[in-house]
Length: 269
Length: 266
Image (cartoon, rainbow over all chains, first blue to last red; front, top):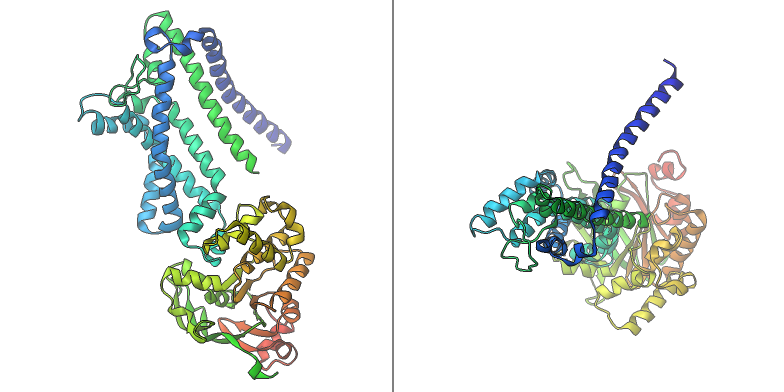
């Protein structure tokens, strides 16, 4: 077969494939925008779910996600530091690394059910803490993985130079190596945040949902994603409209966080 | 050469070094002296162990557990006025103290991801110097000592990553010089630099020997002959010949040294 012809065929096929992929993405975005924007009113942001708004849902979703981040970031970054800087190729480190990789692709519903058995069933009520733990468990392997990989990119000479100046190992890691990997590690944290902010499954069995504004993490906690899941199944048009509005806003939030992550990494090069 | 004028600051005695997991030692029965305010060059073909020997002198091998030292590396202590075996140091604090006395410059420039000022101040701050005025003075002195003050003085707050390779290498030298080390170890400091930067670094090294004793690993034979007072030729982990640079280059005792220096192998 003619090489030029084959080249054209492959080019055509890959272009069409790309178009199909992007086409669906834009279809979703356009539908979301079209239906979502039409359903957004000022009251959407000022009212709580019980009055047809999503104020408490956004606050609730972010509260859980931010506390989960506060828990998962130090744990994940420290674990990543251990794997790269201290664990070396020891069996324990290799096992932890593999396990963490497996956890990255663990089905989120399974994590939700696990936390349900651990933190909801024993106390007898859905609660915000359980939701936070489920989200933190989802974030951990992503943060561990990126920290591990980003530290690996820091040249060994930099560590040696620090040691040669009379630094102790932990000071060099915290003051120089981590600083050199700062952008990558931050991006990993942002991406893991973007991942969990849009999760429904881990919250479904843990924090469930709440129609009212609350900051009490000991009881059911309002969630944007769980509300979308619920609202979309209600028969009345108002609920479904609110679901569209909430979906649109959620998508925008996730998009913004992802863009921020990309901007950060681009800035480096 | 009047031998009595020379003061040994370091003495390597029957040194064997084995890398983690290696079946046999990389350095075999090395003996070598380093004299005060002289430049000692370590030359030899790739894999001969010259960097390994240099890296034993500040115990940086200790970063990678599983190594084995045998023999002695004695360092002259100004306090006790005696030679003390640095291979006997065990505690992290003692090793930190050792590395403050023996600085090291690497093949690739290794600026830290921080400002030029903070790079030079880093080692000083590790020593516990916090006073701003004191630091300012020491940073300036170090940058002047490394012949980079003119280029750096107006951009002290800027990131060191924005400097050229040659400037970065001089910054790294400044960073080490700031600690006022007794010995500076250079591990092929110019092999990643262009000829002009190389010239600047060589000039700087010759200048530095007034204050600091220097050991330098180099692949570049001209560099060794231009710069050094003493030369050590190594081959397959053995020290084949050690002596005054002039003698090694003009009238070596060993056939192997002559073959290497005249470019017959290597």
